[in-house]
Image (cartoon, rainbow, N blue to C red; front, side, top):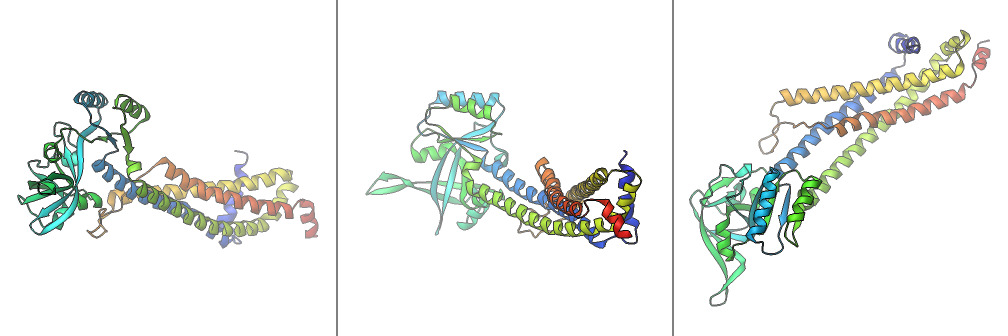
Length: 389
């Protein structure tokens, strides 16, 4: 508290003095905008990325347990009992790449044969499994409508009848699927497991899809009771290109804002040098009244750090407040071709720390440079007194 009168003098000089420097105001405003913008942009970008990842994991699962060989009923039962004891959502399935044919229209597709005895994921809870469920864009490709009969051709499975003839089956379109995920709506379909097993002439399943957070103990326990040769592929591994792109997007954004903060830091340096030059005679007065030179210079540095910290905290707080207002009262401003019709918002402790520490860290470095330059030029207040004479 002994330092407060000294800091009060500085604040009064900046806010009320006739000789206050506009350049320092510009620098402080730029530091505020840096913290505000970094918090605001990170909140929106994290919201967009989090929404994309959540939608994908709700459909594709957080991981897939792939069986490299036929799995016995006893092994499957043991796996299911373990997952039920952990209250994990899952279903067993068989996947097959096929060709869908409707009259003269054909399109490639990946079919998921789902075991309806397992818990059905949320996006399929109200769907009709009496026939085939197609992604909306895939159904448009083959020009099909409700109750149309489709041919499912499996090129990888053939019958020896006057040569190798691809095996096929007929099924009606019972429902559509719209997941807002392009690769699913454009390429994938879902049927009951028995339909694909009839095409394959096999009663086994190829994988078990998980909809549960993959903690370390959960994964280790699952792999421990899995059959030999089983491989667990996480969502991140199955979507490595997307994960890499999102990380690159974040790094580019951080680079741009660090560059902007560096420009602000140049203004901070110039503004502080001018500010120190204006108040050095007042600092000499404190020295004449009995305060040591080291204490005066130390208080100058503390005030600079305090000012930068307060401005950064105010910028981050204002950015977070703006995000909360946008989340609560934001209108639908995006065209209907976009999945997100309004800006999504997502907060995290990491985003808040980055928004606070990056501008403050850069300000700290350049403020120290300005202070060191001022200290070098004014090593003794005696020279200032002599200059007055």
